[in-house]
Length: 113
View 1 (cartoon, rainbow, N blue to C red):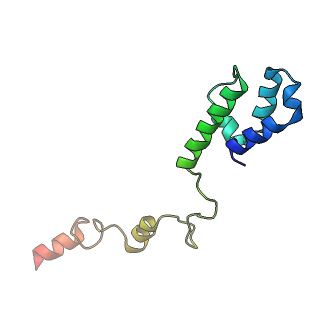
View 2 (view 1 turned 30 degrees about the horizontal axis):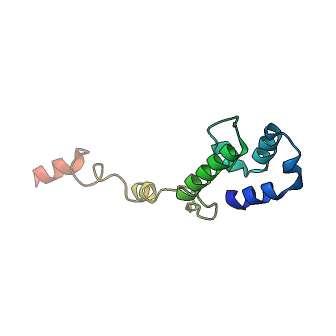
């Protein structure tokens, strides 16, 4: 449920007319989604409207930066390396070590020819 819908629902409750605002703020805050509660900058709010306004801002911010989906996990190879570049370096080796004259063997062979 969006914060706007929750706000309308909360104000429609009959208890809202009979309770002090501090209590209503605590109840409304407890009813927010956990990720929205965690995103609130303030711990205490002067009014119920102030709580809902900040909660809406947090919700908008969360929409702009959605959390990563658990279904989009990085696949790993059977040897449990997650990086394709890392796998390539293991299978092909380092070009500085093989056939480019950096290990001393290939360079001496080329000079002797």
